[in-house]
Image (cartoon, rainbow, N blue to C red):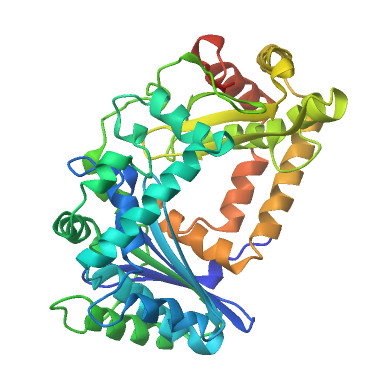
Length: 432
């Protein structure tokens, strides 16, 4: 994987908004606005407020109607999207190079000038309520939110992203506007751009567009960031203090009966946080166990060798104060107990026997290849850049990440396997 550190330039406005440029040679440009607020910040507001706020960004501003927002980039062949997660809200766009200025303007307008029209809110409540019903009807999707709700019970990370029917119905324009004003502030925002444009063009565009869209803001000259900034300190204000990222999370064993044609199961536990160096060997182990390749350990075990499941995956989600690692699969109900026994036996194996140096070397090569291919996707890049700025105050260079991955040893993987997947830490949720 080649280093691209020299391709990243980051600036900061006096207001705190940070923005970044990565040059490309494509006719397509990408941009994303990452905001340091998400579901864990619903505390004090109805559950699902962050998600509803994201929906309302598209329902009109003081300059554009909902229809005008929808057509602004689509009529140019572009695409506009957004999503809400536990610790961030993201709005992103893909356009032709010639339209990147319009895309940047639109993202900042949506973030700062949403009107929260009462009639539009009532329409959007109906949409979200239907989304909640649809989500509940799909156990292969809803089981993930339920798992984290149980694992982090009593902690802000337990919040369901969509909220619930009662909380959604209780939302008002005034409450959403208050949430937006509190959380959608420039010092929580990170604008990332990949485009074939000059640094001067981007700086002038951001300065003028920000001044136009942020209430009462003068034109503000940006400064170049030569050192990492402690940007993620902002997100700490709503967190519970934890000396050890593994200390959060309560093990449980729950089976929920239902009228589904198959059983869905998650086995998992809390894991290392964004700031724990042990995350690197766990990322590698996660990829080896059930990553995207068909040759992953659990895919071979459950699907190829025993034909018990159609698909099995592992995922590792990192948060600021903890993380969560899960193994999930769907199978015929008659095969459920056998699948669980095989998974637990495999976890016992990796806790009792180290991987060979040769296996670790092959796993590192595979993961670096996956990362290199992913880095060629412009949308993936701007989203990754935004998350990195939000989390670390800088963009980690490909060379630094590659160096860190190459330094992982078999012993490190063994230690994190024993620590994270200790039997007493494992939680199991079954939709049967």
